[in-house]
Image: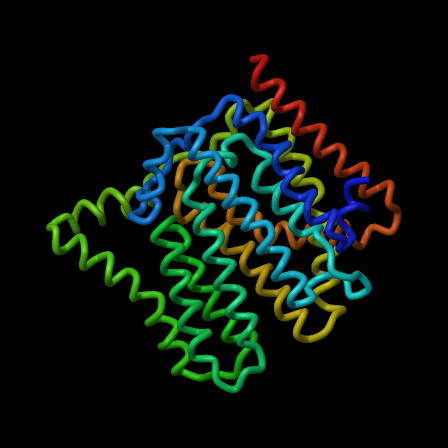
Amino acid sequence: MFIRFFKTNQPASLLALPLFAVLFWLVSWINPQVATEVFSMPLYYLFSLSNRLPVLSEVIAFVLVLFQSFYINHIINKHDLRESRERSNFLAALFGIVLLSVFPAFRTLLPQHFAGIFLLLMLDRIFDSYRKETAYSHCFDAGFFVGIASLFYFPSVLFFILVWTAFVVLRPFNWREWVISFSGFIIPWLMTITYYFWFDTLGDFINYRIGSSFSASYFSFGKPDNAQLIFIFLLLMLFPALANFLRLMSSGKIKTNKFLLLFMWFLLIAVASAFIFPVGSYTHFTLAAIPLSVIYSNWFLSLKKAWISESLFLILLGAFIYAEIMNRVY
């Protein structure tokens, strides 16, 4: 029902995605909350002021999640990163919405929502540079977008590794491209450091905004019996989904294989950064939703029997409904 509907590229499927997203967020709008345990970087601070109006902050978060999900889908369709026998569809957007909305804490205004958009812009520019003889502007933009993302959410700084990894995978060595990408990355930071130095608050910026990202903390899933049920189910589905993704990486066109490899690197960096920057909440893993939406959507496309994919998706929705009910009962 759901999977079969969104496997098409009909206008009705496109229009249905925002309505489907509203189903996840409707409960949060009835009882709006604000993000907690968030280490506010300069650019996020400008938007976090909306937390004084919880409904407004959740509406902004909803728009960001919707835009991010559609952008993931745009990249997948634009670069044909799916099962080769399948036409353009909206499954990647569907799983983007699910993964970015399924936990209550994800449905608040997080710096990761902003950072995710700029990391997608970085990926898009890198993919566009493939087979181009000169791609200096692409390299600069990729580094610049990572720099902007890190000023929303500091652990995003690690994704600059992905930029240079992409150069190794996609392009012949050109030292100018490496230098230009680093220049793009460092420019937003130089402007930010200059601002804080000018107002004699550079020490506070380093100690409280950057230093806090390294502080010891823990990952909290709220009410374990509820939210962890969804997490465990997603984790169980991840094993066959990853196996299918690895098969897809080695069976498609060279270009497609390389692009999919970069999504795998994206996932590894997103997970590794959680241990390097223990930022205090499982909301960090919203960044992993970008590659995971690609991995899950391709797996669901590969399932030949429709009843299996539909059943799995309905179980996931059932786990979400159960968690929401339990969160309000207890």
